[in-house]
Image (cartoon, rainbow, N blue to C red; front, side, top):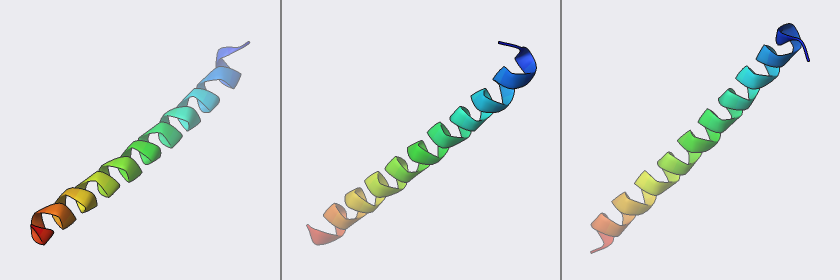
Length: 39
């Protein structure tokens, strides 16, 4: 495996991981806000 082939895939995985993490965080914030407003 050459570095030229490795790095783009690695960066793509990081991007996917970051976007998934952002989605989870947004969902979590929405749930917490909803819980606070409801109580």
